[in-house]
Image (cartoon, rainbow, N blue to C red; front, top):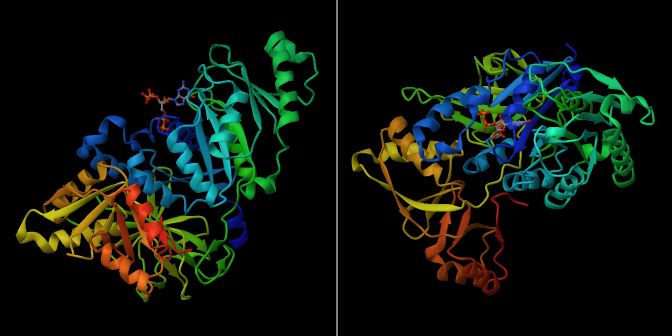
Length: 528
Ligand code: G4P
């Protein structure tokens, strides 16, 4: 087996979007192209529907399904493609941020009628900060929507991107005639037939060819010529290096539901998207083609069976090969672990795998050894960086509602926090525990899981906090001592023991920053 070839044929990416833009539909069509699934509808159930926001039984059911669909792998033209699922629901945004540390590129899906929405803005910002290469797919062209140029402007302005269209729509909604593929120089006519899997395209090197009129009609031909002229004048030519550096984002148009424009997207994607990228560890930059294995945990999924507290840790292979039954160093614990049944993911199935390559995701059964962000290696003491915690939006005290079950409660909280369900803060003053989450939904999930998986009961109490700020570093000067004394009530330790200031309002945060300028407050837990 040629190691370098295996790396070169891997593409590991995530699809991000605001809910309902069409992420699930697009994922499904991509899998259809890979022959990984036989029919549409197979991925659909992975979604947490809007209606489920207060129905945690539904969440539990969804959680079971999403183990299988966390990673969807398929083969296309001999490329091994790994799609990492990113929940669109905003209460699970942290999950998505963490998954983005394991992707090598992303596809951003935008609804042609709604344009750039809130969740897309947040997720794209995270990708932009990390220079992750992005391709934009503007979806639902079979419906009336915004003008293509207006949308491209909106994408540039709201998302801070620099775009260049690689395909361009001919009409839209009722008048949608098809797509001109700028990258391949051909026309794909829209027939509205969703069963059509492999589209027929008509090569069009020269747009002055009068055949254009015959095919799409006089008015549409005229408009297309003008539009493409404008595209040429306004947007830069596609440059693969700029795309790979995160400095240029190609745009495709289509309709995922009708499987239209998806092949163009996929063909271009496999050609230009990055192979597994090198990753920074605290110690050094690690390249995928290094011989020794290294990888990191970016997601932990609790098993559905409450009788076995078995969990699945998702490890992204960064370098070398991961092999079954070989001992690997768990760097944080300083001990060697062996895995007899590592899982690989294929379409919506998981199966035991002997060897995995850089870019692949391996699922490891775990009984409590792993935390999000842990590094595994062949022996070198590496620590991968870059899975930050952001300040939660909601804060509540968690109280024990069953004094006989204190131990179970603590264990449950501990493990749920390792999974990254929420963040725990312990107040310096009295040791009370505060749970911070991105969405209110998580409190129900935690309460439900504590009871069903750990046999512990809890209640919550409001704790008004505006923002959690990490303090870096703790210093031993007068100003710091004064700060600690005055703000005692608002200081807590996070789970890794870092000191955190829980500001109760924007005003108090501002005042604190002014009064104690040498106390450095950070808005993520990640050290610079
Ligand atoms: P998401 O994962 O981003 O949340 O979106 P999803 O794919 O579930 O799509 C959201 C809705 O948009 C779905 O309709 C889906 O059928 C529709 N949709 C996706 N792509 C297209 C497209 O190209 N054209 C049109 N017209 N619609 C599209 P729904 O009614 O919410 O769900 P369902 O009842 O069809 O399952």
